[in-house]
Length: 158
Image (cartoon, rainbow, N blue to C red):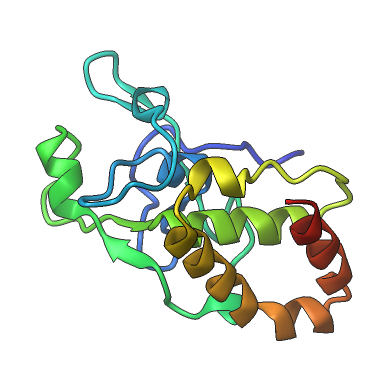
């Protein structure tokens, strides 16, 4: 049986199984100008919509690629938006880690198309470079898995 693409509650969110993918890309991190702007597609308290992908469950565990880089505690921000569970902490990838997780997920797949839009999601040169630097830290693991050339070819097409 195929694994569902989302969790529809926050029960399994942890430091190890942090929110990543498009839900994290579309989460408004304080002071950030990166990512998407479709927050309500993933987190709408009023209609009780909650669709999150979790690292190590819906996405590969990318710790060996990126360590703990870009995994942030969003408990307070989630509570301000009406998503809180007593004594639970919520962790989420920042926009850079979420995009990097998406790239690794794609690289490990058989798909030819990566849906990360670097120029659209990271419009400033500084933001783009920060993502590229994070992806660079995953190069040894991608090389070991035989997927580095796939990622390099995709990067050259961006």
